[in-house]
Length: 499
Image 1 (cartoon, helix red, strand yellow):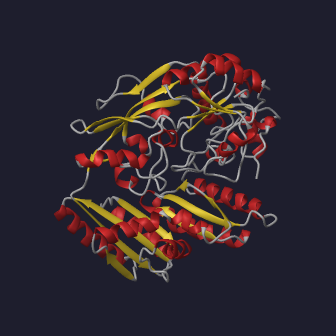
Image 2: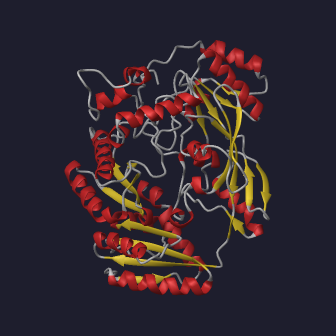
Image 3: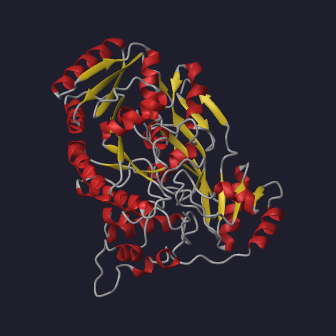
């Protein structure tokens, strides 16, 4: 499916002479790698949300910060939109290019600049893969905690842009909790350092602001991350349930008991069977749901917490509980969970991966709601959860070649996100908003809140050239979507409509 840029909703983009821009950039930056032929541009048409595709006007692959600065200064001076892209593994269309803009690909920034085992930090370029940081730190007994399922491929710059998490974010936090300093380049070419290697930095917390900003405020060119000492012991319990709501209730009971697992993940039967067929992790294929609960720390504490968790799981109705017998089995248990997305891809021509967050106490209610929506729209849904912190990933199975199924998949996805908002949750947890969820931002936030977001955007990027049309909807779009009250035919704050 090709995503059509809707100028009526998001404001017009100026037409540019592509050949003239290529000539200008080649003269300005003779060493800059530029791609502009149709064949060369095609691999960059989408990110991991591959249902939407747009061919960029041209692709730039800088190799130095000076090139990034010069290119952004040029784009600013000539009013050319720019979309930054990392490894392209994002799942919300955040790196979707513009047919009238430059796609700035940061994959050549792939060096680990420093590992400091005494300070427990790593200084890396944005194109470094998430897993590569832990691999480089391993000889020092250290690792980088956030571990998205795509960690073998996703880049740290993209993790910062989306505030990525992973199966161990319950205890160790998201990207924002594990970085100390970020260097960015603004649209006018200024290089800024946000945060510090110290425990705190003076002034406003702009580091937190840039984390999760989806490339709308600046382009990340360097990141300093925290490194943690590997736990002395880590053990995983796998619990089977004959009722998915019992599994949801067990999650709340574990947290309420004061146990904070390193990871607490849930999968329903459809996801279990797909993962087991793909990975052979030893999952119980007859279970309606399973929980993976990892406890880590000192050996004695881990043993005590495992016993507490096992008792809680039995009290919640678990039909079977298994403790991973060794490190190899522990890794297999996690491999099944981390490969749940590609596993589901083997049982359906297409699937649509959602990302929302809900209060843990609402797990059972939301699972019932998803089941009802699945029946209503006639599409199967496989549920995979970061259950400990309420971050859910329903996978909607469909066939894009079957008439109407893509539209139904998008419709049920929208309703699931709106259900998250209804129960007091959020339309996203770690995948970002991008293009995918921009309409549901209208359900999550009111006009005054969106106006504030636009004001923040304008402080960094007054002309709206960085990743336009993503993340924060215009008030006009929300009125069209039907989620904002319009007084006498007029929108509030019309002066912000240019963003």
